[in-house]
Image (cartoon, rainbow, N blue to C red):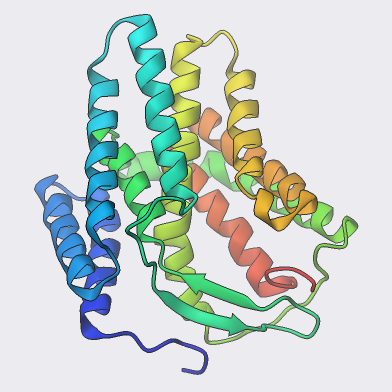
Length: 288
């Protein structure tokens, strides 16, 4: 397939292990996810995707999340929450050493006038999200009834989020309407859904919004939604002010659907629906 970067076998095993780790969060027993994580990390070190400092940061975040969950005192929880959030955020921002995230798509131009696009498999951000969920005793959706209930609530919010975000993107001149198909979607989509959307929603909704909501004891769910959305927007500051504004609007939709359903799967699917709509029907990632 054109533009797909060739990767050595050890790197492919590491990537497969990373995918399996994320997907195993929905599987019982929990040791399946741990086994997949071990495979991903061992293959990551063998392939050179991970190096010494990566092990320190992964272990450090795991300890931070574990300590936060064990704390009972108000100020102890505040301090460990801040420490965990900072460590997870820095990992997600690719600011820690020891990670050489492999490139899967390099300098692809999906349509005339679009910026070139490079897609990475981000081990640092994905592992941050996995650790927050796995150690945080997150309870995934399991029954068909629970899935059906969550999806009924999610669908209209996801539709509204797509409409608002894409309308704002058009108004800001960030994109233009440009329906297109490329087989590279089959590479982009699983990475975006399983790695990007799951990890970002784990951090911004499953950790930040959830813990803020719990700390406020229901007094102001609006504040938790607003902070979660704004933090998500600011995390995209590297793309300029228009990207921050559009991402904040998107983050608001993800935060609202999470607040309404209490289910991380709802925000993950809404997030992916927005991204997939953007990819398939508009300039991606943005006008040059």
